[in-house]
Length: 333
Length: 258
Image 1: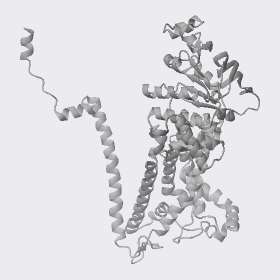
Image 2 (image 1 turned 30 degrees about the vertical axis):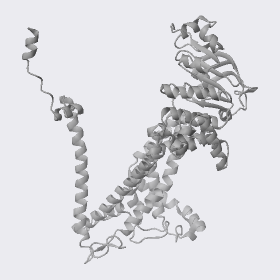
Image 3 (image 1 turned 135 degrees about the vertical axis):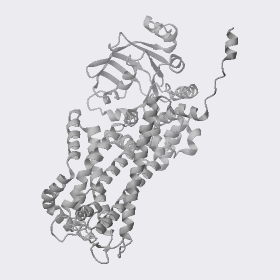
Image 4 (image 1 turned 180 degrees about the vertical axis):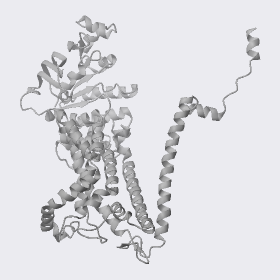
């Protein structure tokens, strides 16, 4: 009787390849399907937004650049109202890159030092309050930084600028003819303060995740606190600090209001970092956009495209640096 | 180089919690002493008091004396950093410096202790890797990262790193618990060779291992969870495993614990 029933039952159809694949991805239950759809949709949305921005920038940029009678990359002028229009991004590219480099040179060592202090030196009861102050620094709006920079930083930098001119003026980079300290160095210093919190916070998080066993390895060999940091903490945190710096650099490259408030712009490339003048992409767009003609706006958008490309290149370079050291990173230990 | 360890009345705390209480023992030079006992009985804590690693843990505090020959490691004016240069340590999980090459890992301790000529470093690295029975496996890739080795090789690399600075004592905290049996055997053979030159103390959960590698065995136990761990007895390994003088030891080694 029993055997008869079994024989009569229809043979189970083996699941098709597609069904098996779906099951393996866990996308058979309704909850899984909805979540898969949402997360995949979000991923696709990100790509669509990126493509839309790039497409928009490129389209408007091509409109502008095709009518440019100067060389878009090398012209030291921004005269979109002239007939024929002459404009170029050389000053903006120089100013953006130089002010960001200054900011990084100042901010990264200080941020790493603060992060190490917070994770390895500060007494436990000081760590919270200091971290809180750093978070506050990150919450200050950039226009406030700009106002502080223009009203407090600029008037108080004369002493430093004079000193730099006296001792390092011969290099040309630090020569100063007097005048308000509304220069690339001022912008760099202000940007350094603005990007300090993000670099500090990310570095602190990375340093805190250094496995105890790596630090103990150094300690057990008779390493002092500084030697533990040099042998275990910094090598482990290296790629994290690079990522943190790139986040900061991204902010420095794109910072608008603070730069526009502090800098006194012109369209010349100044060899000295102390003499006022120059400009950055974001500052130039912000100061010109509201009064620009349709064509002037296209030209500004073209400069925005260059900033976009520079940011992409910087990020790519950072990833390359991190990947090159992957074999030696702490991740596989 | 090997030195005698003489511990008397040692008590260690984590904050207000007393982890081990009133431990006294002597470890002879050029011998292997194994610490056995249930988890949480404080054998690892005790091991870490022998090179002043215990106080690195927050709230870690020690009372009592640890004499290395005649020098008290906890005496006034003794720098814990210099203690750790004399008393080497190998940990439970192999922990080579992940960002350093095999060569640099072994040379790390030497570089801390001062500057050496390149040829001197190379000599010591070769000698240490041979001492750790690892030379033949890695001699062609000394500049590759240490983290690329297998677990057993990494642990021998850590041993090479520890012996490169010629410590007086070598502490091992469950050095084989993360390794497969073949790697474990390699490390056990190595311990047998190393005891010709160093005083070795090893914590192990594996009683066969204690029986195989050690000359003397110390059994630790705790009265109850939350109570401090105590040294129950220390004796010749053969005696501990055949005819211990305390009933608790016999219960533990014969598996009738608890």
